[in-house]
Image 1 (cartoon, one colour):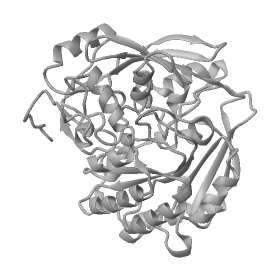
Image 2 (tube, helix red, strand yellow; image 1 turned 30 degrees about the vertical axis):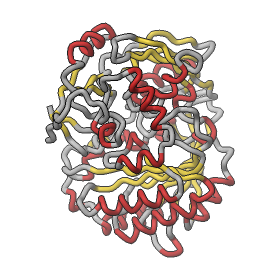
Image 3 (cartoon, one colour; image 1 turned 90 degrees about the vertical axis):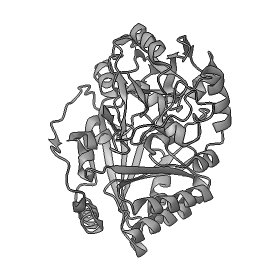
Image 4 (cartoon, rainbow, N blue to C red; image 1 turned 180 degrees about the vertical axis):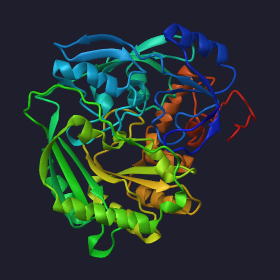
Length: 450
């Protein structure tokens, strides 16, 4: 079948395997191991080609709950369980998932593989910082338990390892107690990028913080933004909520997205928010997952899809480097509706985890030929300032860029070779960045692209 991910680029022809349980998964792995590289796949919410391969092993049916220890705040569930499902189970127990990405439809296995982060990295770190442990199916067919104290190296390689070490079967997640699921939200208007950085630093004690940037603003307004701060409200409401949002029924014509329409939207959104309330209380669903309320919103970028470009740079040069990036983007007229700036705390021990102490900027771009030279220039800025790109969002990073920015890649590769000597686990992305092309057991076999 033709398969892609959330960015709808690239597309490839893949065989999708959907085991009903762990034993069936093991049998499928052994039966298909000689047919091509295999990559595990959750809900397909990564943006590029990290979950695309000749053979895709879906965790769709690994969606059971095994236990919930309410007293100690630990839930044990299958890798295919979505974060939305976890929230529905734990919220009535006055518990909450400590780190949430921008979509509730991400699976637990996918959140571990990408070591996802949220609006509170400066306080709570990444998703895997709250993982007690998980069972991992190796290419040999053996299942091993990985944690900070058992199979420690394999734990740190798999957390953020993009599914290249094996298939996560199930996991235990440490939850947090909250006074309620409503969020006290406060918005602050910033007229330029320097001011945005100052406001984020001054409000560093807030649990959640994120800034929406008008990436097409220029001159003295470069980097103007709306900053949204959040803290759990002392409101003893523990109801889960399902919003009925709109749906994008068809793929829209890509020509509708241009620098004029995006400039008009960004300017209108910025000015409208300036006039509205500065503080309110909202349900967790509205605060954490605004885009989930728009079904199939990825269709808005046209049939050719889009690329999400997310990078992180150290705090010391963040203002300088992000200023450079925004000037390039604004001058090229390639702005996006979704330009998000967040502050990161300290990096963890996971070998390929994305966050490092500094600031991360996320930009969405309609895919077109003229975009790729711009992204190459942005790569140069990021590397110059000792930053890196997020593997879960990447669709075109070069091997050189990857290896310059992820210092533990050699250690990761050494471990992968020891546990997966035949390179059974691999993806289009891992081939592209040089993690799985060496010692490939299938010489001269090209992939069919749709």
